[in-house]
Length: 162
Image (cartoon, rainbow, N blue to C red; front, side, top):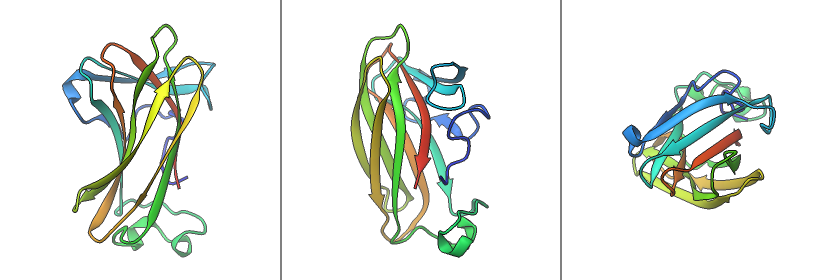
């Protein structure tokens, strides 16, 4: 819902390696077996704990129907006392062994809180979900996928924030 480019048709815009960034490779791949729109994000790491993330800030000029009275997120000023959920489809990339990791939702910059949900990805698409309740001080919501297994490749698609 709130996130732009959730099916990666527009490329990798907004997504970037974060944890052990120099060890993480991320690219958009055109693939007919993608969950939606024929594109997906393929991520791998050479170090366990490598991650890829997307940040949503209160200064975004996104308008969400039925939320905040159809006002842009920027009208909120902060995400204080709001609850968010995220969902995404994950699978081991074709030819890659099964992998595991977590989907985390971060409240930034302060108090730097997060919640996370573990996932195990095999050759079939699996849905992973996570939710986070913001407390005072949050202006950025980060959605971050952590990969446990070096040398394995993960496909991510249809990422939604609600």
